[in-house]
Length: 175
Image (cartoon, rainbow, N blue to C red; front, side, top):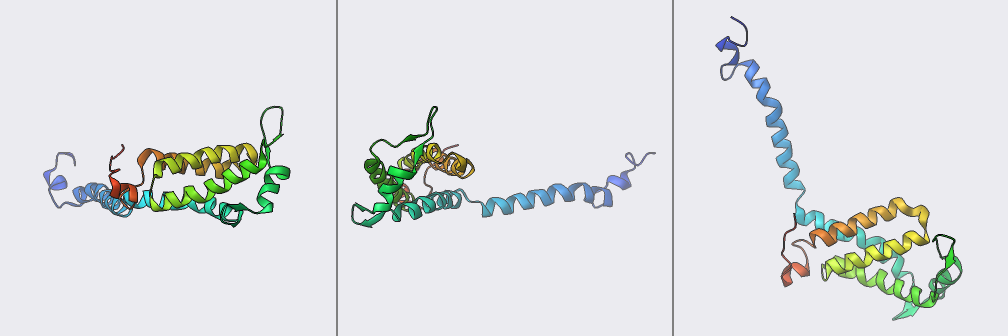
């Protein structure tokens, strides 16, 4: 009689059977642990904060008072920043307007993201800003790609349970 046919080798509690169930049980336990840790609401909250921080830090430096851009912000768009398009680089058209809009977006969109208010729209706004930033600083594409991925994830799956949008009724789950 072979070992496969020997009932003593496959009986419950035998060393052979215990080993064959140990690995799947350990994998299942590890998966349950990861699922308990990686809650969707937590991932959505952290994505919102992670995307908001670099834009807030950049935007807050552009202001010297309420709706007053500092000279450095306008100088950047006038003298430093260029749009890297085919046949270019080209200067920004209306640099003062672009500096003002950039400063507003870099401050307002992160606030909306952190609060979870108008979250999907704020994420799309930051995605569009990321596209302009990529045209301005093309060598920064690894960071810009990360920002774009975070913005798309937020726009696709929403703000999560810890948000004002959720309180106001945006509870549609996305798959």
